Image 1 (cartoon, rainbow, N blue to C red):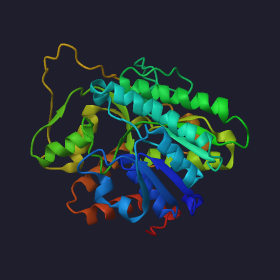
Image 2: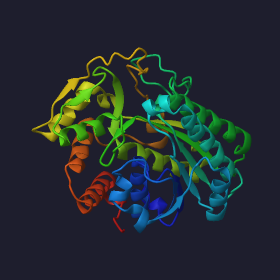
Image 3: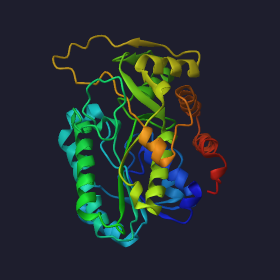
Image 4: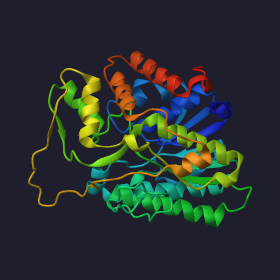
Length: 359
């Protein structure tokens, strides 16, 4: 599948983030010409800096997705054939404290890049990466399908729902011709994997706790989410971008999440992490903080990925136990050389013979 990307010019917004770095690494190994458009890495440390991808194999435009003129100029000058839009303010709890930035980035950032693509006929395939949280959460035990109502609760989720609607509106208004750019959105579950250093995410919090020899603190042990390794959804994005590049009828909205066994509560996920880590990992439930207005968090969220499986031929390859083990494998490493080798080894293992590590 990755042979398709050899010599393709691929533009990625948000390439300095966790998922963006993994995607950039995959594509450079596949022989693509990768152009990244992003601010500095959002965390310190960052996977992007550790594997030095921005200095060795990716052309980096250090810019803000909210700057309409610069993104338009960049797309027009570069003329990529494929665009992955991943730039975002991605943290739910941060969105409560910075709602304006969240809405500006996640909504107007999407408008800006779609407007740039509208004026750049060279772009044949566009994938807007959103989230599983775009749906109006009704605490159903069944998975949400792509035709469910979009209405995220918090500023992050809500802004991503709006990003979906913006994409839908642009596709129907400006990209309806059969020869125009194929436009899709990709909604993935909660991802884990090596190199995620974000605050307020359960596995990065686990890693920070065990490395400082403190207990892992869980806010909501019974909260259930669709957890998967980062390579699972990236495989979906790459497959979708390829399919619609060759046949515009594949465009649309797609869920990329784990099978039922990967839809687990926080307690089970942390236990899997502790088992993989071994000695020294323990957890406890956070005591009541006494906040007068605690932030809303959904109790149950699950995706129905039947469409991606039947239409694209995509399916998960690693179960949740394997995902936890692969994450711990990376987290225990101490040098950037070892971390880079680990990332490359896991990419090779996941994609197998379809990838030659040529960078």
